[in-house]
Length: 212
Image (cartoon, rainbow, N blue to C red):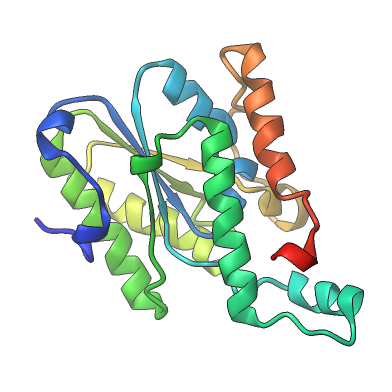
């Protein structure tokens, strides 16, 4: 199978064949840290090849209203927010220790295109290796693009098209969800890795509107 927009995936297929791969489907910039930061570090420490697939630029973030109040009378456009958030995503991926060739950015727009993107990339990685873990968010998440990852992965797993998958509860689930999601807490296997998480979080703490 060929993945949607596969030319964007900078993959040396021979180097990945039958290697342990862990693919994270990232709905928005910052989800790679807030939801996936700990398991990403655990996977890297375990010697897995970690891939990040970002499938929106985060232009729809509600933060734009707050930011525009802070810099009034200037205005930040949705596109400018998206460009800045993608840049932050790349910096955060660096801070987490993810190889620069192992993160790819898409923006398919429509819901069905996003679902197809996740599905096709999942099937592509399955064709490369017998040891692939797919990571998404709970299908019960209140944010549509979060729950989409879990829904698509769960369906592929039930159909026998992927062998291993994990779904994680985002911070939104712990703050706003009416239903409590059952599961275990994920902790860093190497406590010293907290410095990677903290560095990635600080990427999103920077406020410098004059320099983008």
